[in-house]
Picture (cartoon, rainbow, N blue to C red):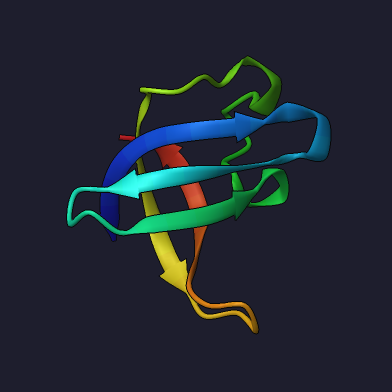
Length: 67
């Protein structure tokens, strides 16, 4: 499990980016956030934990939840 901060949300397209503590940046889709979170109310700077999974376009965040 990794920890990071939401860097950017692209609400109209349903995705965002997380800046991990190790400096890497991960894409996430709204379908990957925990059911207790409301994607539409997320904003930059919120601390989250997440798993990293591989995808055809590179690593991405999954199971995103508040840290």
